[in-house]
Length: 242
Ligand SMILES: [Fe+2]
Image: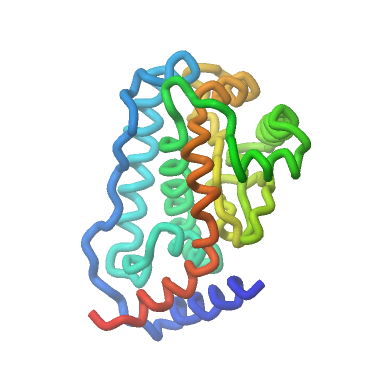
């Protein structure tokens, strides 16, 4: 895949020191939630949201800013960091924290207090084409999330042709490392559901269908295709003059 070849070139530049270290101020901030912390009840309680967003996500923000300070990664977008660090055995901590930051930013911005109507238009057509019905898609997605072993994420993602996939990612993985655009992501780390659901992961996943904002997912689908340029943009950012 061309994107992997480009990322390998970028990785080589990073690990051989051919690009000078860069001093940058912390570049990532904790996102603001687009709803009050109690607005997603009963699917997600206020306590669960406040700890998940204010403690776990805040930790990923702080860790990543510390890890990339004065490195070439400080010139990259979050997606570019995830793709580049995934290629390096030396940068697993950066990959883990960048991946979790990207994942949670997508997660917290895909909910609405009352949910929304099912997807319409080209996303609905793509779902029906791939799974036959919206209910079949939800069933397959939930099953995949319930069966994922250990901590990770379950994603609805699209390729550059608009074909949809259900993707399991372990730990902080994101489909961007496979050249896919993430559209909908469900966090199945225990920290996401243990307060409200204890060990009942399936109940947590099923409850989330009531608060998905499908307009957000549709917008992500309609604007997909940007991932293919991420490595090229990263290289441009690294080679530009200060
Ligand atoms: Fe999480």
